[in-house]
Amino acid sequence: MREHTLEPGLLPTFRLYIAVRLVFVAIAGAFYLVWYQPPIGPGLLMASVPFVADIVILFVLLRCSCFQHWLGRLYLPVALLVAVIGPIVQVGYVLPAFDTDATFAFLLGFSLLLVPLILTAWQYSFRWVLLFGLSTSLFEFLLLTQRIGLTPERLRWSTVALFGRSLLTIFVGYIVSNLIEEQKRQRRELARANRQLIRYAVTLEQLAAHRERNRLARELHDTLAHGLSGLAVQLDAIAALWEQMPPRARLMLDHALSTTRTGLDETRRALQALRATPLEDMGLSLAIRDLAERTTARAGLGLQLALVERLGDLLPEVEQCYYRVAQEALENVIRHANATNVSVSLQREGRQLVLQVADNGMGFPAEADRQRDQLGIRGMGERAELIGADLEVRSSEGQGTVVRLTYEEQRDSSADL
Image 1 (cartoon, rainbow, N blue to C red):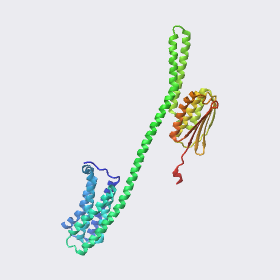
Image 2: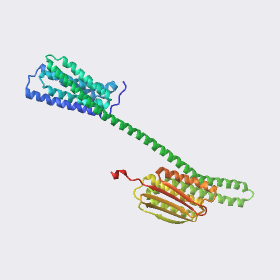
Image 3: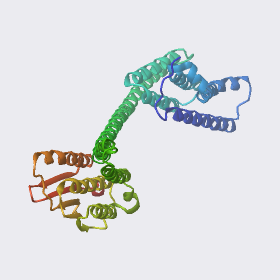
């Protein structure tokens, strides 16, 4: 039979209830034997059977997992039925035979039915709680009418008490059911929010990977593809001139070898830059300093640095974004700006972290260059969007270019509570 999913914590609570009932019955039985000292015989043994039988059945039922597999959806209803019938029989049929006080019997019956009531409200809706209250009252009333020697006055009092206990049971069940339903609703909302967060994280990861692939494609196009294209043209020319003009062919071969070495160096540099290991080794400020010094030294540019050393704790994705934007901005200066000087600054302005890369190059002099530079600018803008930062690019013909990245750290709302 198909298994039914139980609410978290319900089964351990049910087992604890059975253990407490077992201890209570043992203490009550010992007290009765010591205080009243009844004669031990078949009658006493028969009277004690109802107090032990349901506990033994529930203990076996709740401890053996095979019953849950066999009974499936009926597992919990069967266990609750046993947990309800036992106390009703004990309080309504066995205890009156020993002239037990009616008030004590009323309180004891309500106490023993309270935990099964809570478990029912825990697992099922309020209509099942209502059915629980009405069916237990009806069953106890039927037992009440079968008792021998019950006076009309005692029957009326017992009926009124039974009706009152039924209303109290339904009221308590209503409160518990509402609390459990609210908890279930919050749990469903939390699960839905978690699913949305997972989907958002996956989408963000895929978007970041897609943008990284685009950036890698641009990087390889500007290095490896250009180098291989030029090398192919030179090798074709060498093949055509090898027999007719050997000296010129050898000169072109030297140029081809130089182009190959340059392309290899550029490819190694691009692959090394993709790893961004300086962030792990040196931190953001020192990594940007090392990047700027290496890049400008390679191109023979002048460099001015203004980098704050203490940046505090930054998220890894924020550090990665700042490093990549600085890298892209410096590469754009080398390839397109025709500049002689570059300034790089990384400063804190309140809660804002500001990176600025400026050059004295030619800016955007022509539409073709503008479109070429837009590829790198677009990549930097996409990176800024991923962390919620602002990217500003200012350029005019003959006046150089300024790239400014600003990220404002969010205040921890818990600190204000």
